[in-house]
Image (cartoon, rainbow, N blue to C red):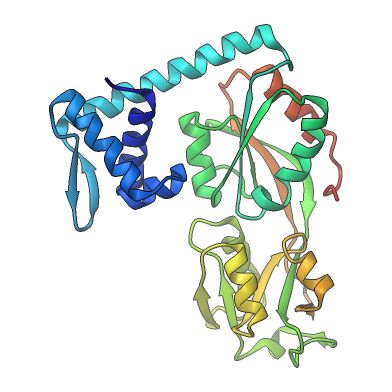
Length: 297
């Protein structure tokens, strides 16, 4: 018998173009993903996914099933919105997304206040880079997202909330620490960069360009935690949100460098699809986020 869970797994395999990517997105093991697809194919009696050394892609039958599955998920989402109108904040679900900086370091702090006001609402946080968050919003997989850059899709609207300060950091004990720096002092340094598709990566590139360091050596690393650990090990300099490295600075394992001009600040925005009708929990979170003037502690 076909289940919604199996269909969700199939859609994730197609979106991720592979079983390992789907497993990561669903927080499942790869064998579990493969088992769901195998059972789904047995139920339909046809192959739904081509498995290759380069990944996975849908068969013609798989494309049909994925298309119908997306429609079913949209109907389920619409049903949940309709029922939520009768619940108010007495129940329901709030699904949010944030970038690799805002998801771990801002959303939990906002949800702490939200959960105190609406303890019966179930909450879920997804974390990805800027491009991934926008994709989830466009597909309707999440209601609201916290992002940095202006959305590229015109169907998404952004509302500025607060400012985020970025900092140039190095390992504790770096000879660059403890003095006033100018861009020329950074010549010959390696810079630790976020992955392509990240808003922080785009900010890092703008900062290096403004310092005349377009030709500087760069290492591409995936995620904030990876960059922080690499910086702590003396592998290079990094430009990150002050909130992402506050504990490392307090612990004395990273040092903030005083550079003029400073790295640019950026605006944290609440992003949503313009045509999405918000549920009461979603509206309540929007109201809470609008009331935040500074980064909560």
